[in-house]
Length: 246
Picture 1 (tube, rainbow, N blue to C red):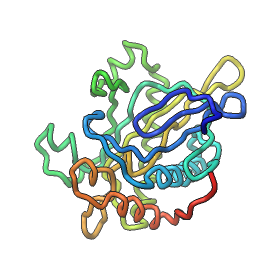
Picture 2: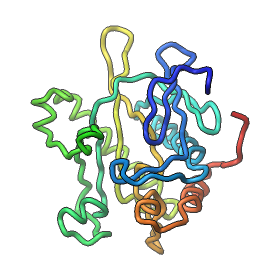
Picture 3: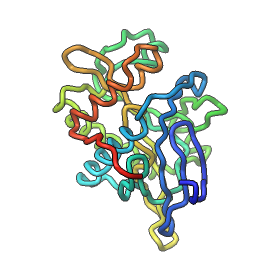
Picture 4: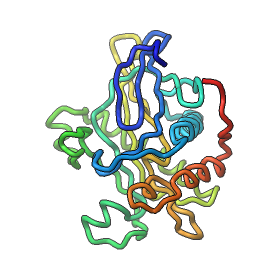
């Protein structure tokens, strides 16, 4: 990727300008971070796994009518995506109490919620990605009311589909984060698409029978076996991890 123009480097990915107009290339790294970049490490092969899982999930979601920024996978670690204006919000879906929710409200981890909760955090590392109420989002003009409604509708549809998908391979989708972007319609307007990635990095997956954690919590909580957990999620999804020439 040395011949590509680097646009941005984040905690888990590098973005390059794509060869096609209005596209970017996402390069998935093995770097692992937690607690707002306080804890750092690597998970060998994570970038390859997350790239291929994201390809599968984005493809499946597009098939049920969810517009995405994903175009195609280019190599083991690279994928071509539409260049979008990211809405600076992390959309968090909680199906079962875990992590921050359990700590904040004193709810036993693993408690299934009566219905899914959708909440938002401001996407700003310097501020620690604080939770932000919907009325703040509207008053600060981070997103319009129409966009918020559309984001929540798409998020609910994504959650319903992915819960079923993972249940079918013996995994419970505890919670996850999504990002959305504004994609130009080529005529002075735009529409919302699902952006970024979907992988064990940004969701919690527990084995239904054993309750074993199959996601980045293995890194966050020093449980070990991160590589094996990520590989097992890919295996159950039918994702081939055979390497290719990049």
